[in-house]
Amino acid sequence: MSRAARRGWYPLELPALAGRRYLVTGANAGLGFFTAARLAGAGAQVVLSGRSPERLEAAMAAIRGAMAARSLSPVEGAVEPIVIDQASIDSVRAGVARLRHRPAFDGIVTNAGMVHTPGDRLESPDGNELVLATNVLGHFALVAGLLPHLAPGARIVALGSLSSRLSTFRINELQLERRYDFWRAYAQSKIAAQVFAFELDRRLRAAGSSVSSLVAHPGYSISGRTPRVPGVNEPSAGGRFADALQAAWAQGKHRGAEVTLHALTAPEAHGGEFWGPRWSTKGAPTLHTPTRTSTDPAIGTAFWAFAEDATGTTFTVGV
Image (cartoon, rainbow, N blue to C red; front, side, top):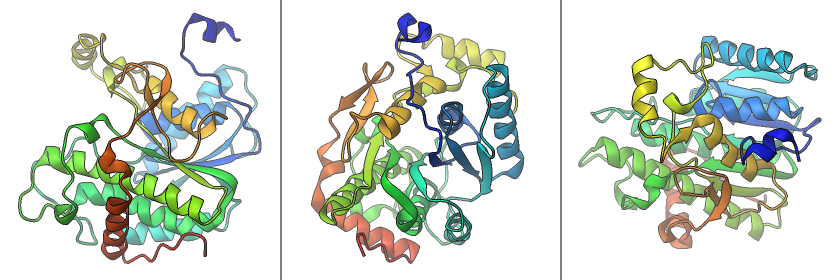
């Protein structure tokens, strides 16, 4: 065990990942950035996706700088960018077309999403409610396009949330056309992300696939408890002070990413599982029990049909 591991549960030690390839969406900041950075530090080749070329370049510069500071020798192309707007199905499909010309992936982390949701209902370029489109529907189309391009034994890890325990799930009102509420928009989108991930794993197992789908939730991970990274995470002094007051139940995003990394790489993690922090909002990765709504096969089937219609995507597993 390393000296860092002896000091406590962070940082989680990763297996050697040289020769493996991963895609992390929304990797230019927050949980996605630290997930990508740790994967690259373990020797993996990581594709970082995001909407902004400038922010992706800043994230890659930070990762390369951190690796150089630790005297690591990154493999050629350890981190590379791809610009994808998860809210736009056209952008997702264009990204999929480019990615399918590259080597297969050993894992996908569907991390990109809106946390600070708008006060009023907005729509994506495809006419879907914007939060749902960004957090779930874009990933549905992405995974549908890349599933044939995954290596045997690959894992797909979706970002879940504690909010899945704090809201109902109205399968007939996911677009929030009758009544929009910024909290429900976020909570329902995260429940939908979990529903999709668990339904995907059921279909993968039914098809006899070696690919698996899991959910990881990061607990309560906030910027002010996160190390400063120029161009990536730069909270104000006031923000750090306010977040420090929540230290008893909050953790940094670098630690929240540990749960995702565990679900993605640990031998003891398996398809259909739900991983989260030990103390619910913070702590070492541990196996949790998801909500019954998230794992209900009938709800999963209904959401799958809804997502196919909303994205104009036919997503058939095992064919």
